[in-house]
Image 1 (cartoon, rainbow, N blue to C red):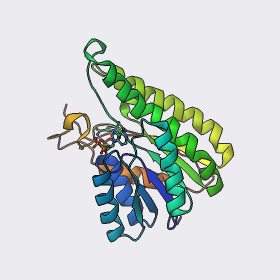
Image 2 (spheres, rainbow, N blue to C red):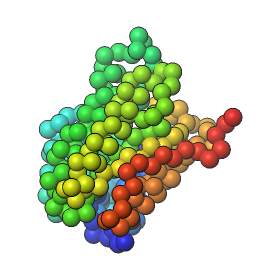
Image 3 (tube, rainbow, N blue to C red):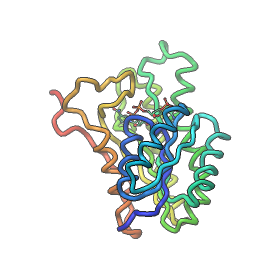
Length: 237
Ligand SMILES: NC(=O)c1ccc[n+]([C@@H]2O[C@H](COP(=O)([O-])OP(=O)(O)OC[C@H]3O[C@@H](n4cnc5c(N)ncnc54)[C@H](OP(=O)(O)O)[C@@H]3O)[C@@H](O)[C@H]2O)c1
């Protein structure tokens, strides 16, 4: 199925998994909105991806913890690229510590970035995705959306919540012509969580997650893969 000419918005796409998703989308001919909190990085990445093509990339800076900024991000995407077919809610943070060692700011940062933002961006995007006729919302969860771990109180809360929210959205939005899916990776080598997967040669690469995301988009409209779990094949024993 040709994805050329479709428009994708990827939150948190100046690094890690989001960047790999944006790169792969552009390579497949989608036009992409690159976004994160850092205007300099947003501009650099959008220019670099546009130079590579064949899809176009435009950059719009946005802190997804701000509901009004998310609405402006979606409106800006449609104003700049004319339509919206795919929203990838990828931006995420991890503050891995037990509740009694977690600050209020860390708790709020995690819940707002990993969960609140998905509501803010999706709410703004749904009318545009419905007009697409083949709209997608893909949320980047985690194996931590299903498995609790020590030090994961806040992260697990946000990612378990995201899985529940995604499944409910899927049940609602299928009737608006929008497919909703959650992709749940295990350890991926990125800067995430102070680079906690650094040195883990066995970990997934961001490109692996990007492949899963774009493969979802290639399913025919009648088929909805609503949850993808992916893990390193051979983790340390
Ligand atoms: N790495 C893993 O092992 C792993 C495993 C499973 C799931 N995940 C999930 O995958 C997603 C991406 O993680 P990653 O590993 O690629 O992380 P990363 O390398 O730290 O990249 C995070 C991206 O999100 C942006 N970002 C952070 N806070 C933001 C905010 N408030 N508003 C807008 N953008 C924001 C960052 O840019 P700025 O700082 O410039 O804003 C950056 O572009 C997250 O949802 C994470 O939970 C990661």
